[in-house]
Length: 461
Ligand code: NAP
Image (cartoon, rainbow, N blue to C red; front, side, top):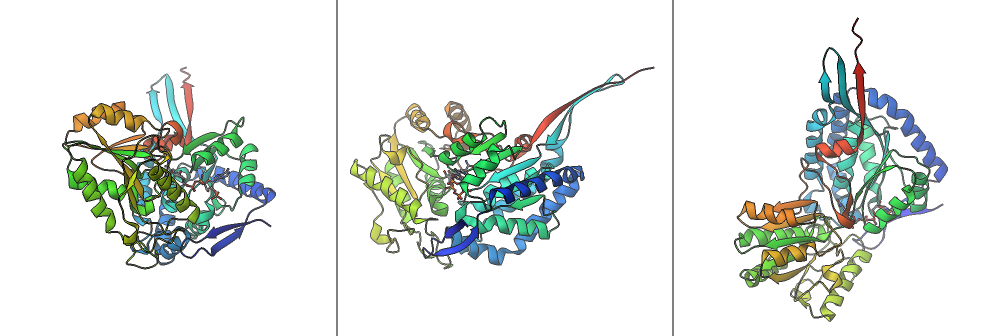
């Protein structure tokens, strides 16, 4: 029997394991989901919304278990209290717009015709979720998919293997029928086989570019709808008129929070030459304040990376950049807890350029490169010089200038004077290798449903 294991970054030992589900059993689970979907979709929308929110509330009651469990699984320091803020914010917001987002688009309602476009659930939605924000990334699709009348099968990352199980337990205890929302422990082969067998009506995959490619390959020829939310290399651009302290605070937080393991984390920063020296100096001071350590210790502000494998990628990228002329500004002695494994000190690199992998490939760790620029044109060219495009963070007092630069950027979201935040009212989407589709917002609901046109001609006697 294949076991799926979470190796804890806290101590490098197996924290949890579950047997991978054999294909035949997984197919039965999907069949149950398909059967349950028709009656779930027939329930009134407000009943579905209430049940989903009850599941969210039930999970909140489990906070004392969820928070340390997360620390053990992926290293998030307990002092941050899990992911409840964003988890609740997104769930409540999508609940508040569900009726509006799903209402029919009426074209004509006259004595002669009824013409309208209604939204129908796809059927069975498959959610494949990553470990970095394991609850928030999953709820982005799980909540609106269920509210819209789909049933959901969740496959969570091995690193956060207990998260799917816990979410489903909370939802079922709150009254969501067991076949409506299921968590399956699946290995990659079984996942691909289910997709290739056309088991699902829509798939939302959040994860790496390579993972996204595998899912797309498995789905080839099945015509299954795909939402792919993949990697990023998000830039910040600090203009000469920026509020320097606010820029340092938000961009350094965006680069290092969650040990830099955020899809929209800041990975490269371009600063106007007039502010460059001050920006670098303040950033080094900001980052040096972290307390790296055991995530179960309430004093710890920076936990280990989720896996020593991920930390090794960051170390290799830094070493490669330094060998090519980059300068590392954080003295490793400041962080004696850096153990060469999952516990990794934050780092700031200067004298970097785009020939270095560190400035091109996703780093996904608490390390960021800073470059000096002379003009908007240079900054735009550098920001667009990437295979990814999730968010870009612009720092200026001039909203018109930010909007005009934003129009030139190849990105899913343009931020001005903020970064690293998912606004549930806006569409979360990316361009280039960051994927396609979009979640949250009204458009997220549209992606989790399909349009059905009604063209009814009335017979007049
Ligand atoms: P990952 O290795 O691609 O895994 C993501 C999920 O996909 C996990 O559940 C994983 O299962 C599964 N998976 C990966 N390859 C698969 C395959 N060939 N067949 C079936 N399932 C497969 O990504 P990750 O390391 O967990 O997450 C980090 C990545 O996610 C980063 O690149 C980050 O930028 C991206 N991300 C993007 C967004 C966004 O909104 N754009 C949000 C969050 C994260 P196993 O764990 O069992 O391998």
